[in-house]
Length: 165
Image 1 (spheres, rainbow, N blue to C red):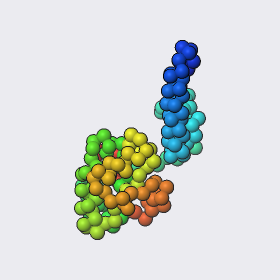
Image 2 (tube, rainbow, N blue to C red):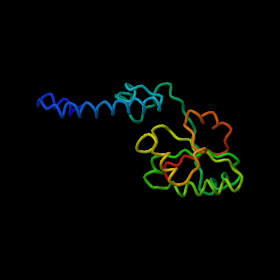
Image 3 (cartoon, helix red, strand yellow):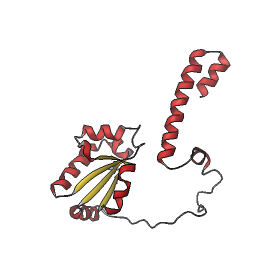
Image 4 (tube, one colour):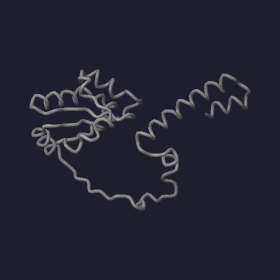
């Protein structure tokens, strides 16, 4: 949008048109991301303005986080019958789709049902995770949009978030 405004100042039609196109596509992507995060644009832009980092937001739910060691994870995966993998940006950056697929193949050999929950804005752009997992020969029938698989998390033995491998 800044390029479009500069185009108006300089009376340059190329800057106006290209800035408007880039700005419009950015607004569309921002709208998709806000919808995926269940937040409004105003909340994303101004949600933390004026809040101290150490202060608790009023009405926010406190949750207990349980940490696991790699050995604990191995035991859980070994006995799991249903596993959902939620790939994240870390998997894309590390290019770890092949080791993740190898782990999934091993789990399937042991009788586990393995599925992938694809967040709409995971990776660098929409559809990025699908492409990475297809590159690792993950069957398409194991890929699910987050909305389609959300209800299955309650009946799943292990839900593994692969943002860092």
